[in-house]
Structures are given as C-alpha cells and as structure tokens.
Image (cartoon, rainbow, N blue to C red; front, side, top):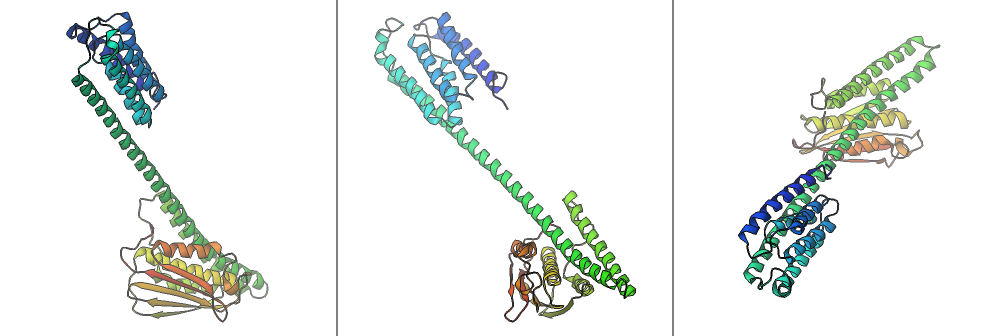
Length: 390
C-alpha cells in the first residue's frame, strides 16, 4: 500500500496534530509557570506532525527534523506535553524501517539538547526565573524514550520474521510447483518414449512387409493402434491430474502387476524379455509401485531404441526392506553409446534416477563387463516412503 498523504501516514499524522494541539492546551493550563502558547508554538506543533506524513519515504530526515522541532519547542519554554508523541512516532518509524542509528541519533540529539537547556541555557531562555530541570524528570523522560525505542525494535524484529516466513513460504511453493512440473514431464516422457518406440518399430515392420506380407503388416498396424490408444489413455490421465490436482485419478496408476503387459508390448517391438524373480513378492506402496514400473518401462524402451540385442532379462529381487530391479541386454549399442545407453545419458536415465531418489532409492547404470548394458535400481519398501502424487 502506498504510504503517501492519502494513505496511513496521512491519517496518523493528522491524529498526532490534533492530539498535540488539544493536549498542549490542557498542558498549558496545568503548567502555569511555562510560556503561554502563541502562534509560534502552534506552528511548531503543526510542523512536527506535517513531517510525519513522509516518515515512510524519508525516515532518517523525518526523525532528525522532528527532533529539532521538538527541541526548539522545549527551548522556547512552552509547556511539556504530547509534543513528544511526534518524536516517538518518528523514531519508531525509523527503527522499523531499519535505520536504528538514525533513530538513536535523533533521540541523542534531543536528549543532549534538553540537558543543555535544562541545566545551563535555562538562565538565558524563557521562561524567566526558571530553574534547572530536576534529574528525576530527566530520568523519567529517558526511560520513556528508551521504552519507545525498545518497542520499535521488537516490531522491527517481528516484521523481519514475517518477511522471512513469507519468503520461505513463497520459495516452498515455487519448489512444489517445480517438482510437480518435473513429475508431469517425467511421466509424459516415460509414457510417450515407450509407446512411440513401439509404434516406430512396428511402423518400420509394416512398411517393410506391406507388399510381401500384407497379413504381417496388418498385425503391425494393429499393434500401432493398440500402443497409441494406450499412450493416449495414460497421457489423458496425466493431464487430468494436472487439471484437477486435488481429485483422485480416474484409473489406477500402473505398477508391477502390469509387468506381463509390458513384456508383451516389448515382444511386439521385436524384443524377447525373460523375467525372473527371487524372494517373496509383496504389495508395494503406490509411489514405489509406479516408480518400479516406469523404471522397467524406460529400461526396456532404451533396449529397443539403442541396443542391437533382441533379448533382455529382468530380474526382481525382493529384499526385507527393498526391491531390486535389474535389466540386462547383450548389446551392442546402435545409437552411438556403448551397451545400449542413450547418447549423452538421455532424459530417460535422468528420469530413472530422479524417481528412485524421490523415494530414497538409487539407480546405477552402465555397460556390462562382457557386452551390453545394465540398469540396477533399488527402491525402499517402507510404507512412509515419499510417494509421488498420482
């Protein structure tokens, strides 16, 4: 909100002006020994609040300005009273704005000037016959000013805490949005990469056999239709989650129960997959189940796209607290990378590692000692593992 003459600063300055004008009149009746209020006194009582209008834009100048105006008022012998309210508000604004040195300097200027007037210059300043200021009054005024500055410091510290908390909440929200965007991008990549790889292989088969073996070409086209339909369904599910993040998905996310379907899809792309399991299989948390399926899907997709081998082996090892996924192919690489790895590491390998890392697991990839490529993923089975939103 703009703090100008039409904003909060204008209203509070008007309140101070009215209050000091009225309060000074009451103080004049109670302090008959002081100089009576005149036009110059009324002017000083207006200048201080007028400066407060711009205290948020120029806190340092306003603090010193109000201090000087208040000191002139006191030096002229006018009655004490609410004139100090303007000085307190000016110093308060300076401290809250982070200019505590200026606030202390303005207070120090007024305090030093008041001591000089009250204990030395009073002989030559009005009112005539005035004596030195009692030290008890000086101590009381000093305690009051220190209390105002202490409250200002507390408000400043609290405002800084609020600002840090707002910044932390905004940063957390940005991280959440970035993580959600990354999750959706990873999901789309895994879905499309696998399906398009199958479609690409079958399209090549169909074109090659269109004239010589129309029946086989028709089978390839049917496989393309099924793969594209499945890909569209999964893409729609991801997009539905994006449009309505608070709603439950319309269909369950894929998991290891769809491994036979994945093997069958790989077979339509000309890849023979051998699956072996060791240990006692058990139900997986949804996030772990999805990650395991996507990692296997991406590993088989990489074999189809980047390896000259037409066979792959999947080994599932069930441990007490984790499941290990191992995918091997015998190579050689056809995409310029050894062992069937995508050139440059590929987004698929990065996606595998990100999925496993989000669950506290690991993924290791690299060429096998003899030939080909190997992917080993270890995913924890804890029920409280970080699960990706479906």
